[in-house]
Image (cartoon, rainbow, N blue to C red; front, side):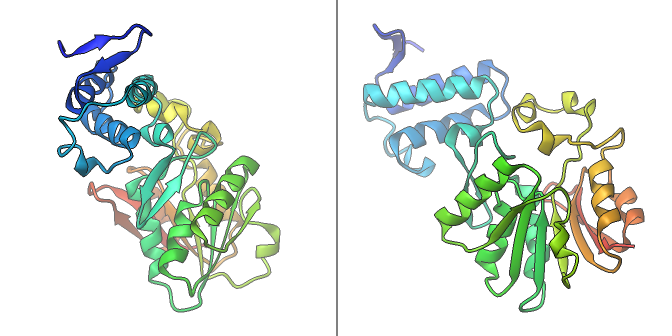
Length: 283
């Protein structure tokens, strides 16, 4: 990378945006991250305050020292396997952009299936989300179906606060509480759907996954999952009143077990074709 030199302050300097993009890609790729070019594009575009699609237009422009320093710092964080969403401070989810940080999981594309289930409910239906994290699921559902009555909760006060911050920023009114499992005051209501993306990775199998997942809050990744990964999920099903409908995300091999845990259950496949969300009735 002849056009990229080490400046007097020890940071990288680049003759053009294109060369800065190449150097950021090289740094991230050396750390064996999955999508180094895409990550570098996101970081450079963010530092420039433009969309990724605009990078080709500005590729020959000379970046300012401030932009170079910002990209270098961000690329170093990504090369340390910090999730890209944390480095950027945000993640796309359905039609929203959700703010995320280490208090919460960053929302994945496959989790959007839970929102799809909610959008099919009749007008005015009552929904509660357990383990809301960033609030992405509930907020996306309300943004698309404002007629629904949606509340959410999380056992982590820090996560609940992050969800409230997203709700305020997006201008979406929603009650978000702190509770483990279903809030007690909810049990006296008629709830049409309980939505949950709970921990389902075990303490052993987490090390078989990308290192980025170990930078996310462990309570939201593994929790008390037990040896089969279904401990937290099983607990919510057991405490849910009989006859209530649940939509739950789970690991790709959990489909058969989920269909046994719930009545009249069906499993939805994600964009990769894997079994990911099971919808059924609490026994």
